[in-house]
Amino acid sequence: MRGRLKPVVKGYREVTVNGEQKRLHVVRAERALGRPLPKGANVHHADLTKGDDSPLVICQSYKYHRLLHARTRVLRAGGNPNLDKICADCKRLLPKTDFTAGPYKVNQCRRCCRVRIAALRQRRRVLGLRPA
Image 1 (cartoon, helix red, strand yellow):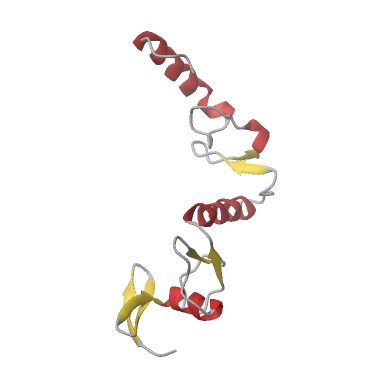
Image 2 (image 1 turned 180 degrees about the horizontal axis):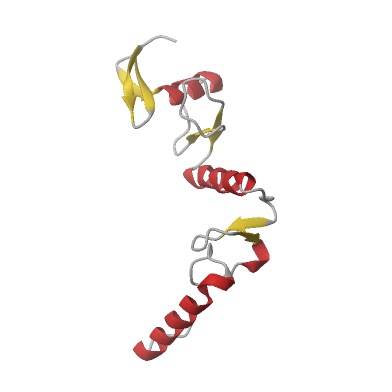
């Protein structure tokens, strides 16, 4: 690889290529792809380390990149990413069916946020807002 290695910045190595400063993992991904990354693409470190030789995955968007991290957290907790989810509040691994879907936080299970949802609904009633 041509370019001058820079010191580590936020855990990532930076390199100057053709007068442009880029993170090393981005340069590696572009080289594997054979062209610059598309607009909005992100590079995911498959082993979750920021090492120079870590395996990389090119993600089409930041949203997909976050999905990979969420699925990895479930796997590391011993669950199945297709069936389980981790609650944002209680941090428990639970079946996806235990999560609420609605205008409130989707990443909170019904058990730990039942009280919070009731309080929010009450507050909306008191303020005269549309019930959720």
